[in-house]
Image 1 (tube, each protein chain N blue to C red):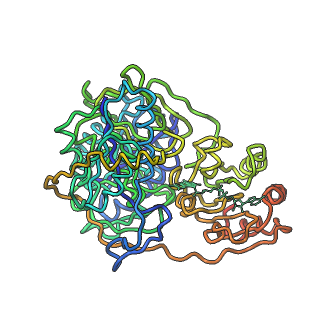
Image 2: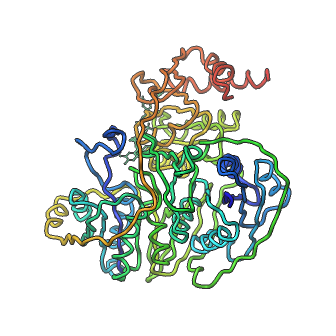
Image 3: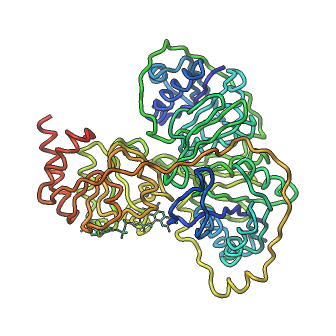
Length: 324
Length: 248
Ligand SMILES: Cc1cc2nc3c(=O)[nH]c(=O)nc-3n(C[C@H](O)[C@H](O)[C@H](O)COP(=O)(O)OP(=O)(O)OC[C@H]3O[C@@H](n4cnc5c(N)ncnc54)[C@H](O)[C@@H]3O)c2cc1C
C-alpha cells in the first residue's frame, strides 16, 4: 500500500503546490500507516527531485517520455494508472488545479476509484474514508465518503500548507507503455509569460477592481506587489473591460486562490468575487464605500479613496522593509 | 458536425446557501440557472453555428436531472440550442452523471461534446473528464478558445501563466472555462417563442452505482468583524499586518 501523488514542475522546477501536496500526503500516509510515492513527469534535475524527499516522499518515480512532453489527458491517465497498480497505491492525490482537474476524473473512471475534488483537509476518518471538501464556491463544506478501495483526491491549494518531514532520497525511473490510441491530442504551441509570479503560487496577492477607475492607475498596484513579492489579480469586470489580462481574473468564474494575504483595492466584494478569494488567510479591503460587502469578508479595512491610500501604503511598506 | 452541450441546473450564484438537517441542500425559494460555465460553452457553440452555418449541423443540450430542470433546458433552447434531452435521474455524484451521459452518447454520433469545467453547486470539476474516459475519447480541459475552420478544431487551453494551442481528433470532449466567449448569450423574445416548439426528449436512466456519498454539510464559521483603520494613518495598517496578522 502507499499514497501516490502527482507532482507538477514548471520548466524543471516544482511548484509550491507540489511541496504542499507531499506534506499533505505524508500526513495521510501516517494515518494509513504507509509511505508516500511522488510521481514526476518530465525533465527535472536530481537536486530538484530531492526536494520532494524533504517534505516526506519516501520514493520518487520519474517518467521522461517524448510523448508526454505536453499534457495529454488520456496518456497521463494511463501512465498514472500503471504506476498505481505497480505501487499498490490506495490513495492518489493531485493538486486542485488545471492539471489535477484534467486527469483525476479520467483516472477515477479507469481505476473505478471514487474521487473527491477540492478537499480542504486530511481525511476525518480512514475507515470509512470520509473527507471534507468545499461546495457552493466556498459558501459551504461537505463531508463525503468514498466507497471504493482506491481513493482519489484533489487538494485545494494552500488548504494544508508546507511541512518538512525529511526522508532518504530514493529515486526510480519508469518507462510507461503508451500506444497510438492514447495520443489523440497534440500541443502545437505554448505561449507563457515568464518572470511573473504565478497567481496561484503567490503568498500575497494585490488585486484591483473597477474602483481603480482605469488601467492607467495600475502602477501603484504593481509597485506594491513587487515590494511585497506578491502576485497581481483583478475582479471580473476589470478583465472583461480588458484593463488587465484574463489570467488575473479571480472569483467564482476565474481563478480560485487562497494566499496568506489578499489586498482588495476598489473591489466591491460581490459574492461571485468572494467565492474565489474567501479562503485567503487575511483579507485587507480598501474601498470608499463603508457599506461595500468586501468589508464583511475582510480582516482589516480602510474606508477611503484607493488612489490616495495606495501611495501611502507603498511608503509605509518601504519604511517597514528598511527597518527589517 | 454535431455538438452536444452538457448543462447542469444549479442555484443562482447569489443564493444564500442553507441545508435541511445538514444533510441536504435546502432548495426552498431557490432560483435555478444554467451552470455558468455550461452557459459559456453553449454560447460559444451557438456563435460558431451562427458564423459558419455550414460547419454545424446541430446543437443539442443534455441534462441529467429530474423534471424541475426542464425550465433550465428550455432556457438553453431559447438561447439557441436546436433540441434538448433530459435523462430522468437523480444523480448522487458526478460519476453517476457521467455514466448516464455516456450511456446516451454511445448510441449517438456527436463530434464535439462540451462540458463546463465545474458546477457552481458541488464544485466537482469531474463530469467532463469522467465522461471522456468512459467513452475513451480524447479530452482537453480548461479550454479558453474554440473555433472550427474547414472541419478542423482550433483549441486553446489555459495553463499557469499562459496558453497552449492544441489539435485533437474527433470525437472529443471539450471542458471549457471562461474566456471561451465574452458574455453568455441572452435569449431573445423570438428565441423564447421558438423554444416552446423545440423538441425536449425525456429518456429513462440506466442503472448505475455511485462511488461516493455526501454525508453531511456545514456552513463556514462566521468571521470576526473587520478592523477599520483611519485612511489618514495607513502606516498603522502596515504595522498591524506585520505585527498582529504576521503576513508581511
Ligand atoms: C455568474 C456570475 C459569475 C461571476 N463571477 C465573477 C468572478 O469570478 N469574479 C468577479 O470578480 N466577479 C464575478 N462576477 C461579477 C460580480 O457579480 C461583480 O459584478 C464584480 O465582482 C464587481 O467587480 P468590482 O468589485 O471590481 O466592481 P464594482 O462592483 O463596480 O465595485 C467597485 C468598488 O470600488 C469602490 N470604489 C470606487 N471608486 C473608489 C475609490 N476611488 N477608492 C476606493 N474604492 C472605490 C466602490 O465603492 C465599489 O465598491 C460574476 C457575476 C455573475 C453573474
